[in-house]
Length: 403
Picture 1 (tube, rainbow, N blue to C red):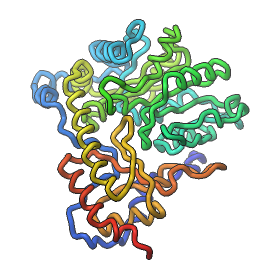
Picture 2: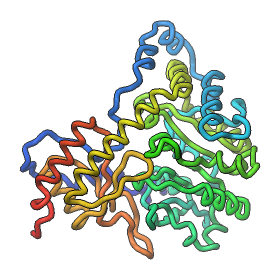
Picture 3: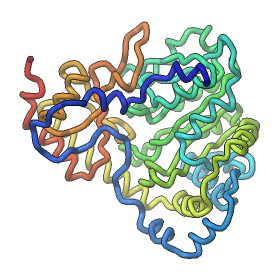
Picture 4: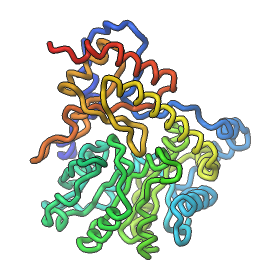
């Protein structure tokens, strides 16, 4: 067996299940799950209709799917990237775009493709973080270095990273907008990280899965390729961005995303994936091309989240002060007590499930940035989210009572 498997931490939801085992539901109310970041808004009607088309289904069932992806899908992704990020020119669909079966799979396998196991290999990542980054680094024989998210914007404090860590760094995982903080890295900060990559030779893997859910329609979060392009780096050297249709288009079950950027790296990653056998079914690729070409349903999706944030935060702020994030669909508030105890009480008193912040982060020399916070995913319907917020307000005294 791979000895590095012993280094893996239990997944956050395993910890949550253990934490809530035996907890009684005093509220006797229907469960509202704010714990899992699984979009619950309806899938776009035009895609559901397309999947019912017999010719699309037969085309999908009748062929082995190409790992490189259908030309029409790579074209649609390239057009999306150029349109969304105002790139100098659209990425080359032949060499700079690669469809993947969801970004979770790609973010994980990417580390195994690009990391060279050495005694001093380091993979830098935000803290708190999506646990796939950590697991990918550990299994690839690299040591994670956690960068605490702090400050008003709750983004990683990269200025705190020692130079010797940058010298040993082979891979930097970014997540902007952040999961779970909702923090957005500025274009200036992304530019600084690109220059650090030039100096030390590490690869930047930017997880941009929440890029299309943001508060201000006139101020979308900047992307890694956008900044690279503005710097005149049209080859996107050492820059790789990941995104998917899960959050953007409410299609988590389609397992469809992309990897884009430096053609030299993508050539090797395609070789890796050819052996791995991870190829998206043809009919999923056809549907994905349609989804990337349409922005109407994405704007509607953003508006639903904006409405939920405005209403839910407005209700909760009467007893529980919190900030609305700039992007993403999570709230990341501080808790009035230990985050694990608060999570248990929330189930007991209100039948609302969240996840403790300490399950999404690691201890560092400067503390654990997830301690006494919870992640709340506003993915349920607006009516359910309002009901959940009202339950919390109604039971706040019980939730915060001294034991």
